[in-house]
Image 1 (cartoon, helix red, strand yellow):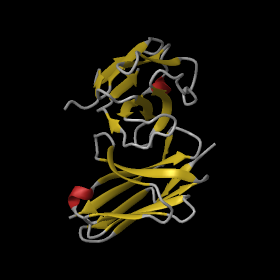
Image 2 (cartoon, helix red, strand yellow; image 1 turned 90 degrees about the horizontal axis):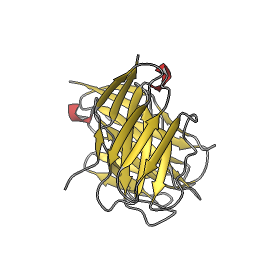
Image 3 (tube, chains in turn green, brown; image 1 turned 45 degrees about the vertical axis):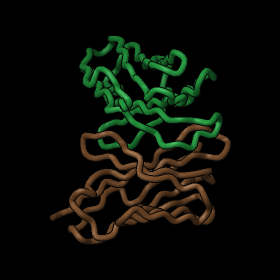
Image 4 (tube, rainbow over the protein chains, first blue to last red; image 1 turned 90 degrees about the vertical axis):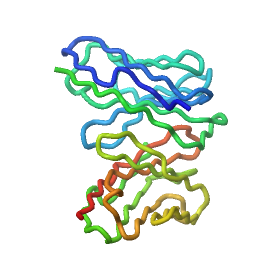
Length: 117
Length: 111
């Protein structure tokens, strides 16, 4: 079946502009994660959605970052007034979950490479 | 907050040599997962460990979870060029529902 998809694959934007990144999780996966990966670095947790529960936004680096998810489907990550330090690959992952203790593998999308000039 | 460190950060080995990466958490973990990310690719799940002292094998890869559930290791026997990539551990803390990824170990295998 189809895996996690993300769009766009690449995005170049000017400093100060807003960008919207999209993630389509695997059908039936109730858990969805967003991560940021700077060049040569590890994965930085941004936000977690679980079903219809309130999302865990504890990883969002500033109030310029926000994310939404419609039910158990598509999610969008929005970065307002982009800065050069926002340049990174933004990865989305989805997984099955049985509630507050997900213990399933995460399936990652190919990522969106964001470059802020 | 919870931190997960990995050592070494980089490792270059000759093809056929063994390789080990270590993952250490500042807090006790409920479980731990390992992922591999090829250059230019996205992380791909390898395995999950749940029980204290658990050992799992996948062909040339051996994974261990420490008795105190605060550390883990991945050992590759007789590396091949296809093993090239960055290996990440991801710790799942007790009472939380998000994974904290380790800093990663980048492996290069010289033919």
